[in-house]
Length: 229
Image 1: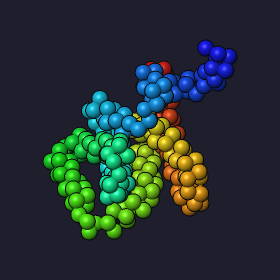
Image 2 (image 1 turned 30 degrees about the horizontal axis):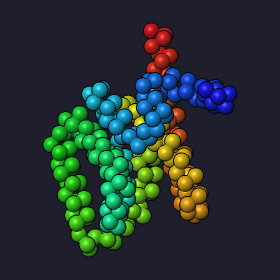
Image 3 (image 1 turned 60 degrees about the horizontal axis):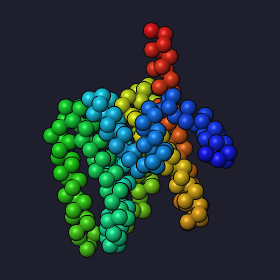
Image 4 (image 1 turned 180 degrees about the horizontal axis):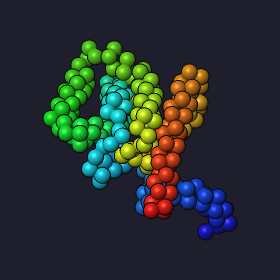
């Protein structure tokens, strides 16, 4: 290891310590930050719901908006005949997000509604993806994906505030979404230079930061309570 490598490792130690203390176990840190697997934020949420066997605190409306926001770009790339490698990871995230929606309904005792939702979503995606006359709809979905993301985060943050807790909201998932939102700001500045687009990404990152603070504060409160007991 060179001196530069040692300095870089030392500079990252406080960040790693914060993440391991408040947000994730070391195995998850290595998986996401050593192997750079940032595209699986929904997976962390799915695993937490299944492990806890409940979906308390999660807003179904927020999840449906996430599903909508991710569907537009996938349909757009499919319509433009992009190869699977260009949208395969996005499709995986859609599947996981749809699964989150089903699990929310399932653990609330509405499994049939959850299955109906999944079926309706699949039918809608197939119709939009196979119809040549759906170009205008896909373009509208693509254009409105960012407002949907902002609305989704706003609703979840409001739900957390009303409940007084974040429930089964995954701290790892929230952190990865925030990291992705922050990265999108720089990508937007470099690639588009459009102030309105960049402003939307800044707003999205700020909302992700609010969610992250809510989760961290919840974890801090839980840790203090456990120590006092």
